[in-house]
Image: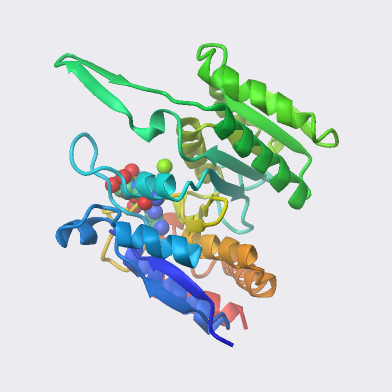
Length: 336
Ligand code: NAI
Ligand code: MG
C-alpha cells in the first residue's frame, strides 16, 4: 500500500529542529509516511517568494494534512504573517488548542487537574489584520465578525465536545462592549446550543475568564472564542500547564487540517538544539488521531507522559538540561 502523504512545513527559528525531532519520533515509533517538505516563512522570502507561497498553499490543499513548524512575523512593519495567509487561504476556521496537566511537570498548578480545550476562530476578527491609516496620527483596525463564521465555529465546538465526552461549552466574549460583533457571536452561540440540550452551555466575559483561569482553571471544559481573544487566552492556558513548550494545536477546515504548536519560532533559543519538541509532537499526536491512527497516537502520548512523569529528561524550559535530541531519544525509548 502507498504511504500516506503528509505535508511538512519546517518553518523558521526552532521550527526545523523540532520538526526533525518529531518526524524522527514518529518514524521510530512505527508511523511511516511520505513527508512532502514545503517552504514558508523567512526561507521563502529569501527565495523571492511571499511568506506563504501559493505553491505551498496548493500542495497542502491537495494533500489535505500538514504538520507545520512556527514561522517568524516581525512586529510593527515587515512582511505579513504566513500563518494568517495559510489559515485564510485554506479556510482553516477552527483552531483547537487543548491545555492539560501533565503529571510530573512542575507548575504553579501542579496539584490541579486542568483539562480544557480552547476552540479559537481562525479567519475573522481584528486578527485578520485589516488596518488603515487615513492620518499619520490615527490608525484604525476593522473587526469583522460574520454570522456564518460564528455558526460553523460554535457548531464545531459542540460537536468536538460530544466526540470527546465533554460536558460544558463556554463562550468567551466581550459582548457587553462590542455589542454588534461579539453580540452576534454570543447570539449564534446560544442558537446553536439549543441543538445540544445535553451539554451545558454558558458564557463568560473575556477579562473575567482570564481571572477565573488563573484562580480556578479546573472549572473549564471547552472554551469557544473569537480569534484575538483565543490567541491571548491560549498562551495563558499554555502557561497554566507548563508553558509553550507543551501546548499543541490544530487548524481545522472543511477539507484540510494543519497541525502546529501554539508557540512561535523562539528566536532566542533557535539553533542551540535545546528547544522542547513536545508541543509539536503532541500536535502530531492530534494529527494521527485525525487520520485515524489512534494506536500510534496513544503510544506516543503515553510515552511523553512517562518521560514527563519520570522527570529525568526534561528540556530547559521545564527546568531541566536535556537537549532536543536527548529528549527525543528518551521518548522513543519509553515508547518501547
Ligand atoms: P515564542 O512562542 O516564539 O517564544 C516565547 C518564549 O517561549 C521564548 O522565550 C521562547 O524561547 C519560549 N519557547 C517557545 N517555544 C518553545 C519551545 N518549543 N521550547 C522551549 N522554549 C520555547 O513567541 P515570540 O517570541 O513572541 O515570537 C517569536 C516569533 O514567532 C514571532 O515572529 C512571532 O510572530 C512568531 N510566532 C509564530 C507562530 C506560528 O507560526 N504559529 C505562533 C506565535 C508566534
Ligand atoms: Mg499566539
